[in-house]
Length: 358
Image 1 (spheres, one colour):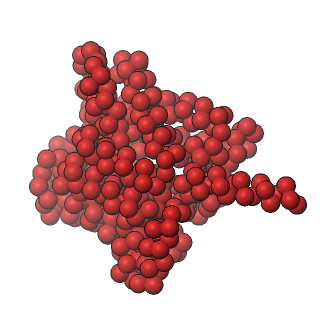
Image 2 (tube, rainbow, N blue to C red):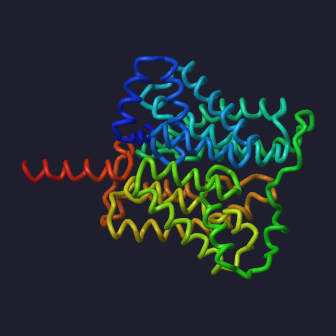
Image 3 (spheres, rainbow, N blue to C red):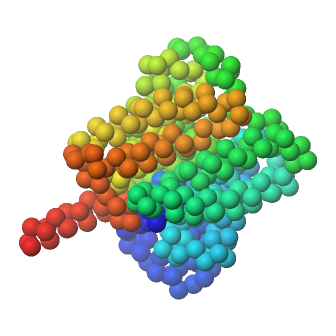
């Protein structure tokens, strides 16, 4: 079982219908929908904007991401992964993110090389198997794997690359523990906060470029106004909380402490649980905790030379969804019914109306 996160818009419906009847369009749709799933929707226009945002920040990261995404999608097609999971991009989005991370952490600053292509292909294949494995494991509890597959791929490949000189990787850009403990000047200006705020979005795409963050926000807005608002709330609160904690300014400026908070709010508010004041407060609290989770995992992973990736939001979201039986004040939504929050809210309202009639 995997989350189906279907976006309901006239344009999307028409495109999906056309893609259903054409193999090539279907493959393209799976790839674009996979990029859209970075923000938990299968809107191909959102996916295209996310892809552009990746290239805007780094052509190298964009190329690696596309290679990884194409490899994963082709592998899933060859292995006959169920269309219900394949077509919405659920076997593509982890690979798209893995490709970005491979370029950033293993080949930072390099041009596109044979080693980069090889690692991107390996990452794409691994993402398919890990997506299937985590989905099979977590389906017992009706919880999606979210970003666990790609985070695990980076956890494996980045440290491994340091002992594979024949692939000519550069030194990993994952910070060492000593470097993390050194805090830069904490004099914040509005411009600095705005930079951190925008880079929280760009870091979702493994960039440190506000323009990439703008493309990410545009892609979110195309699919959902609720998600757009939640992304803004998550970014602002996470950056502010990191400042209050006195965390290194340099890391805060490039979005290290905020991107997991953004993603967590997109998962939980209106998607994992129905929209409500209680859910908003619950989601915001976990978004703030994700900052501490990021610091904790950074301390654990730094000696291994492994990136934190999206483990903080993925683990916290999965724990939150597994806790549903003990959270009577929140209305859990089965991942098979996930979509954009507006669509989910309409469906829940329709279900409630039917129950009242009965």
